[in-house]
Length: 396
Image 1 (tube, rainbow, N blue to C red):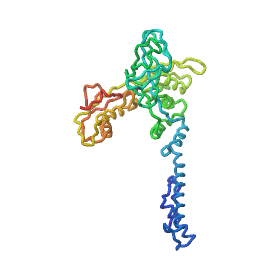
Image 2: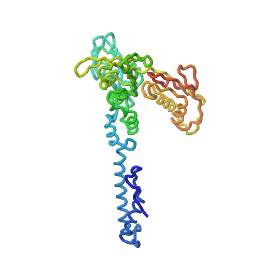
Image 3: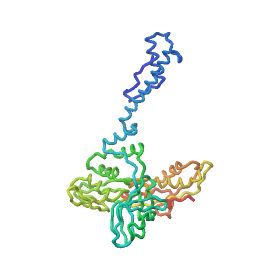
């Protein structure tokens, strides 16, 4: 006997019946009405009608299933997923341009206007965000890539071309002393969902998790942010925090943007702490010095030897391995491991094998100083960040 007790919304959730189940149920009910001798074959009029109706019902159940799934972060997609994020103050991250700082050299007194352009040799352009005046032979100004996307990320000392050398006159050279990072494409559903899981305290007011989440979710270019607090009346010598203070450690983003995000969330009367200090104005015009920290880099060297491959190994396989390891550990323009996360040796071989096809065997070693290589984990302090780059990952 056909039953639909396990269709639709049940105690186990929502189950969508298949087309065959729907057709079976319709034929069963039709026999009750038209008798056992009714003709339900594929070419009979009643059989054709029942199959058309079963097809329409299957579409309807698919829509109902989508409506049900839109209520849950694990199964919602698209706009439904983003609406769930809005309930905790989370917004879809649009495509972003990479921010950074340009060091402009020239004659004293030359005014650098906002929008002044410089570029890399590859043609990626960067515009000055705030005007400034050259003093003492140079000036350091915030800038941002003109085009959004990960291609706008670039290493230090790569932005060296002046687009308009005569506007204004008196500029002799330009460079970026630090990398530009934070450029990205529009956030995908899996990325948004992953960010949702680590942002459940985003709407939690002024607790330390909410402040760190404010920095991570609202400041472009921030890959990771964590917080420490001391709510006692005494100096915390373990965390090195004064009484009634907190410290945010942020990786990436402009200093000014990070400071403003902290100021928006911090409780009144509680002092900030860190190795970076940025003056910030309140709505009433009062000046506050907001402090936070940048993580200290822990350099990681990776050496691969005795690499054995087969015919499936691509021509650029070594480059793929190098980029996969940099992406996993993290570099000056990529997130990778989070702040305070140790480099676990046993996880790196999996990164290598998953980076490309055709890998049979290899020997992998890591080092914290570039000299003593081995298979020991590399510890990372609570205010440190593991980093590497293409010059520290070698395949011999």
